[in-house]
Length: 293
Image 1 (cartoon, one colour):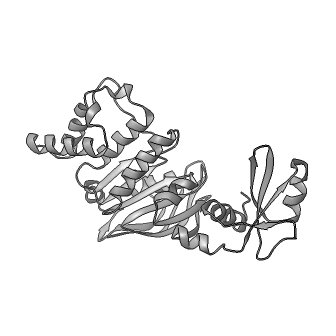
Image 2 (cartoon, one colour; image 1 turned 90 degrees about the vertical axis):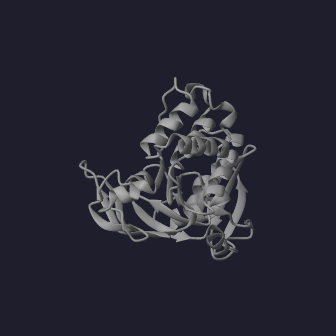
Image 3 (cartoon, helix red, strand yellow; image 1 turned 180 degrees about the vertical axis):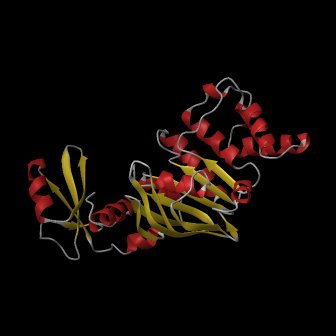
């Protein structure tokens, strides 16, 4: 099963072009859609989820034409949007059971079984009778995934799911996504590079509505071996270094200014070669596309 996006563009009524000729092939597994806020990620996710129409292009989920067979797509879709609201005075058990009914699971015994399995899988069974308004941010996100799994979806879309989560909840949530992604297509849309580095087998980097790079995270990292250089500098020297070198990132660490520079060879003898990571891939991609990071 593959999701194929071909030549998709979208311009809103205010003349903002959110997507520019986007083409992607997304296989089964975890796929990271990585880009800064406002890059077009959410527009693409809503378009794939049949919530809005593109101006041009095509999308296919296997043999299903996503833009023409919306009901077929929705039957096999699990969606966790960036803003996921819950009824605060309803328990997780009651709301998930209600959502299961809306999803077409009308047999009471089947519904009880499905709801129990999903609450246990999302580690919410022990708090199933607790009101959702009392849930932590991470618990609400895990409930969001539980509802997205109703109906055994073939495609799951999660939009900025770890923003605002504490480290423990983030790890728990990403582990759950990784487990789900073994058998279905899971698209993780995020601006957090580490999320993609930790759980995604394939990815794309998008900015200003354009796909700048695709590939396996580790393969894109390997391409930068020998090309990322580090130097600790006084903060007052930062502007000069940004003028003289291809500075891809600046980090303030322990009161020190650490710059990473992209170069095919050592920029000068004051630089030290460092092993690249996915953040270096991300910032280098933005830099070489004509947008500094």
